[in-house]
Amino acid sequence: MLRFVGPDGDPGELPRTPEPFLVPAASGRKLAGQALLLLVVSVAAVWLVTVRAWDDEAFFPWFWNPLWTVFPWLFLAPAWWGWWRAVRPTARMRASEEAAHYARWSRHLQVAVAGEAVVLDVAHREGDDGRVSACTVGVEVGPLTIVPATVLGADGLSPAELPRVGDRLAAWRLPGERTVVQARRSTAPPPAPDARGGHRGRRRMVCGDGPRWRPAATTIG
Image (cartoon, rainbow, N blue to C red; front, top):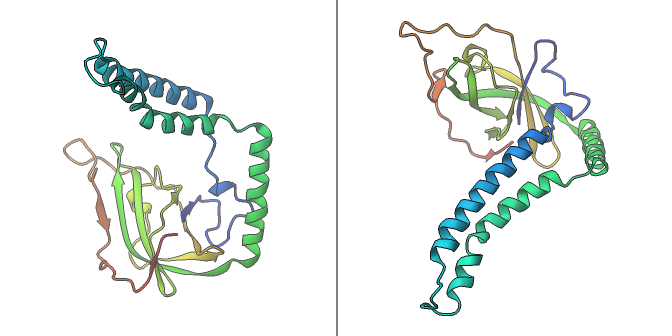
């Protein structure tokens, strides 16, 4: 995991609580939007698959209508179940999960092994405003080359704020073969548009001219 720390934070210290690493719960508006989308997709799927394939004249075998009645729900049911799982947790369940996160993070802090990560490769994608919308950073931590699967705090960064090949970042090895790497997030102004009135990039690019690596051992942190 790679986390960008704000200007007031210290990338050389792990946060004392797990809050910076927790994914916020979906809002009521977001869940309602997801339900509406699922409803539209469900109605469309049932109409296109079940209703249009329905055999009123008993021309096909007896299992024809049951087959096309069940078929769309093989895909719709898991989607609705995932939405229901996001809605179902109660306040008590959330409090219990939060307490478990805090207890686990407290144990991790006691055994975390501090180290140093060397940036080997950086790639990013820019939005229409010239800010970073997504990025991937490959780092070397001891004998391992790691490509963090989760990047926190990178949205809205200027491309100039991203780490460069060769930069040294703070890193910690946690239980469960997990790695946390932290970099400082500054407050650089947004990039100026080019002469054509747009922002440069808007596509995946590699920052720096460091070589691509061929790790002996690779893990996802």
